[in-house]
Structures are given as C-alpha cells and as structure tokens.
Image (cartoon, rainbow, N blue to C red):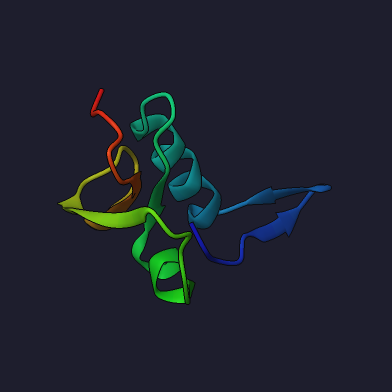
Amino acid sequence: HYGKPAQACGGYVGVELHLASRLMRAAAGGQLLVSQPFFEKIDAIPEGTFWRDWGRHLLRDIETEQQIFELCVDGATEA
C-alpha cells in the first residue's frame, strides 16, 4: 500500500498501516497484492510479469472497499 501513516508514541498508527496489514493478510504465500494507490505509482514492472485486477473488496476494519491488484509471473501456476 502507498500512504502516509501518522507517528505517535514512537511508532506509526492510522488506517494506512491497517490497510497494508490487511493486504498482507489477504495474500497467500508467494503472492504480491497491492492497493490502488500503490498500483497508480508504478511506472513499469519486470519483463515476464503482469497485473491481475482482483476488483473491489472489503477488508476487515477498513470502512471502504479497496481495489486490489496482484503482480503475477507469466507461466506460474495458481495456488
């Protein structure tokens, strides 16, 4: 995810941190899932890879649906 978390009590807090955590939790081993804000910042991806659009999903403790994308490798088998 891409965003700016708030700093408090020597650590980071905020919805940005929670969203990144939920994306990590949603991914299976070896998957790379990203949010719409992160996806929009990417100019290029490695040769032999492509984006799969997972659509909009509700993630635990996040009030709005999030657009999720997966970076996939050509020829890789799905889990």
